[in-house]
Length: 340
Image (tube, rainbow, N blue to C red; front, side, top):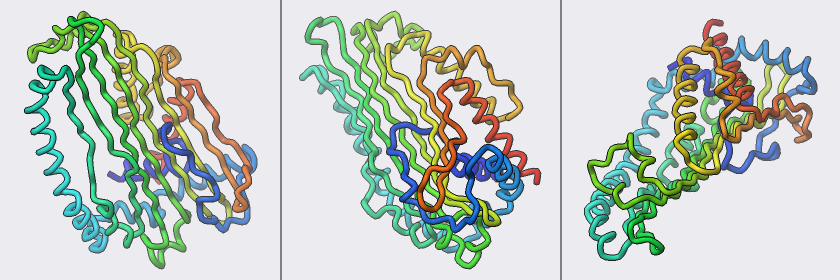
């Protein structure tokens, strides 16, 4: 748990977080850090990173999350949020069950069947958390699976998957920590996350039986295309012993093109490598694999002063292998913080 929390803060505050489909933060959105010295070059960046790694594990904001279960106000807010969204999950299950029951008949009668798995949370579902410094917003929770007859060939069927889930989290250390906020290096902390995907498949009707074997998937496919992206932005204003500023991060990952057996195979292998890296940060990154990936990837990390002027670009990388190496560096920094 502690490793997860520290790593999450490192990802956000140092700028190495997954990102793509969410609007990038602007330095003007962040509170002032109050720092007197800002990161302006490689030397000042490395000096800060060395000090920062030693201090983050002891930061009160890390303690806030590690000890959240003992915070009565936080627990109460979580319980109220749970009450607010529990009814929607029940309705969601009912909607899915009803649509699943009607799906086959709708397709047989009209040539079109749909399952809408969009979540519809109440507008103020997460409002109780604002009292403990957390503001959560869900701009989109859309998901639709559809089946339609191919009007050009009655032996074929069109399959569509359309997903767009987005969330943003703003943490106000002053509200979360109260008097302890003065001891924290974080003055502002924000995350934005999104999963976006559109997949279109034209396939033989024989793909439809319930006993369909996934291993033979591509024997039935005529064509398949995908436009997929995963997104998380991180931003923070920070001040550690007078050194700080504002940092805005992005790590973009996406794929747009034909969804072939080779592409899916590489996705599966890359996912396994990623899991191994999170399990053991000393795992060697497979250079040959990641350089061969047909994906768009980008890691960016920019530092600003309190006048919102760009002072240093620490990372601007688009090579998948180099991006994985940067992620490995973050994980290793997290472990170093835990050992401090």
